Each structure stands twice: as C-alpha cells, then as structure tokens.
Length: 340
Ligand code: SAH
Image 1 (tube, rainbow, N blue to C red):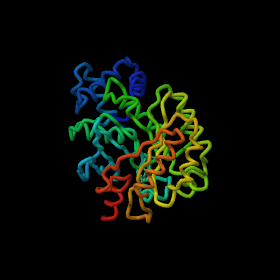
Image 2 (cartoon, helix red, strand yellow):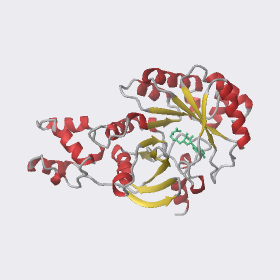
Image 3 (cartoon, rainbow, N blue to C red):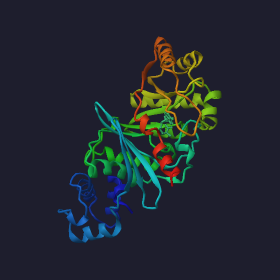
Image 4 (tube, protein in one colour):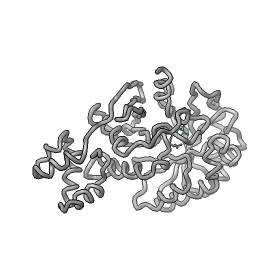
C-alpha cells in the first residue's frame, strides 16, 4: 500500500490493528507532510521495530513526470502512474496564489460532447495517493507553492467518491499540507445522489456544478449524464449544499456559439436559478481539435451576462487559462496519446 493514500483515521486504525497507540498516526503524518521524510527510518520519535513494520507495509513511491509545458499563466504536467497510465495536472497562476487542477480518473465516462477528456474512456479511478502525488510533485519536487486545489482535471470526482474524500481529508488536515477547506473546489457534471451524500458531510468544500444548459432538452444533448440525473434534481441538490454549507455554489456555464448562448437560454437560466445562493461563471468555450464548436463572441457573452445580472443572478466571466497551450481539460493527455 502507498502511504500517501492514508488519512490520519486510517493510520490510527492501522496502529490499533496490532495493538499500538493510535497517536503514532499523527507522528507519521507530520513526518510525511511537514518533515518530508523520504524513508520511514528517518522518523526520529518511533522505535526501530515500528519503523521496520511501516517500511514493510507501505511504499512511498511517487508518480513520475513525463512532460511539462510551461505557459505564462498556466503550466501543464503529464504524469505516468505505476501501472503505466497517464494523467495530467494543470497549475494555474492567479494573483491570489497558485491553483492546482487535479485529475481524478484515468479517462472519463461522462461523454460530454464538448470535452476532450471524455474522448479517452475511463480506464480506472485515480487512487488517493496518486491525487496526493500530483500535489506533492508540484509542491515538493518542483518547489512551487499551491494554495488552491480544484478537482477539475480529467474525470468525474463524484464517480470516484471514496478516494476523492480521502484525498481531501489528507490535503486539508492542519497537521499536514493544510490546504484551506474552502480553497478546495469539487467540480461535478451532476451525479445527484453523490452530491446529496456529500452535502451531509461535516466539513464542506467549495462546489462547482458544470451546468452548461438551462433545460433538460439541451443539457441532455451536451451532457448525457443529464438523462440519468435531470436538471431540476441537480439544481435542488445544489440548493441543499448551499443550505448545509452556508456557501454559494458555482454553476459553470461554457459559452458555445449558437448552441447555448441565446437570450432565451439566459432568461431560462435566470428562472432556473432564482432564489439559489449561487454564482454563474460564464466560460468562453475552449476550442479543441476534435469538435466543431466555436466559442461565443464577446458581445454575445456580454449580452448573456447582462440578462443574468438584470435578473439578480451573481455572474462572472472566467478569464481563459492557457488556451494557447491546450490547458483545457484532457487536451495534453489526448495530444500525447495522438502522437504515440
Ligand atoms: N467532471 C467534472 C470535473 C471536470 S471539470 C465536471 O464536469 O465538472 C472540467 C470543466 O471544464 C468542466 O466544467 C467542463 O465542462 C469544462 N470543459 C470541458 N471541456 C471544455 C472546453 N473545451 N472549453 C471550456 N471548458 C471545458
């Protein structure tokens, strides 16, 4: 087993399982994430037999960097996992700090028609330690500070629920890396039952819902998951999240020319989200080589924005990240696979 997949609670159970004091879990956790030990033998306050047992039971193997592309506002990394599969991670440089966009699955089964990630079908879930590994590689090996983590890389986080929750517990624990709870954003295409399960958790992170359409007819065409979990239930799950967390939910809305960007769509969206504690984030579509979609014009986005504003919806337009370097979800990995 890889040690970077262990939450403190898991380590406590591990120590209990052979009659040891569970308080040792915190010593190990601190040694890993604060002291950055590279061998269990370097943990000073543990006895030799315990260190030897840790060494026998766990590995510290890290993921491997294959290639990186550095741009002005974003850097992209392609990693190889132990079984040879590849995942990508994007570092986004904001004026408030660096945000890391982490992949949660190898490929994706959501099949959204505009998205490059879904072109490579899901092979398996990304393990907890491989998600932690993406963050550790950037922070420790490349020595780049990270203050925000967004689960907006390849994959659907709520289709890998347990590993994603463990990942969040590990990176937000104040004894370790200590990323602020509100600085972790889960983005979902709308797995409604998992959103409802998540909304019951004691500590809630920021949540983004990839909405992209204001009604079932259009959304089901763009995002097949909508046929299983229609829009009303999805928006209701988002509402429950806002009530339980006391936070706004973000609805991401990609602006695709002549597809979902009409005045009628804006009006319908305003009606759908009326009374919900939310932001709408309008995102100019990032053109990919395998679709024929175009981004909406600036004027169209601006008109759409004004309609939402007029109906008292909080709305922002996301600045485009790394569009020149294919930073949109899944593009580096798909380019890499295409050249192999
Ligand atoms: N599966 C989750 C996590 C992926 S997040 C989800 O759907 O939310 C990746 C975000 O990028 C999603 O909002 C997705 O809809 C969006 N996206 C995918 N392809 C895009 C493109 N070509 N241009 C702009 N945004 C895109």
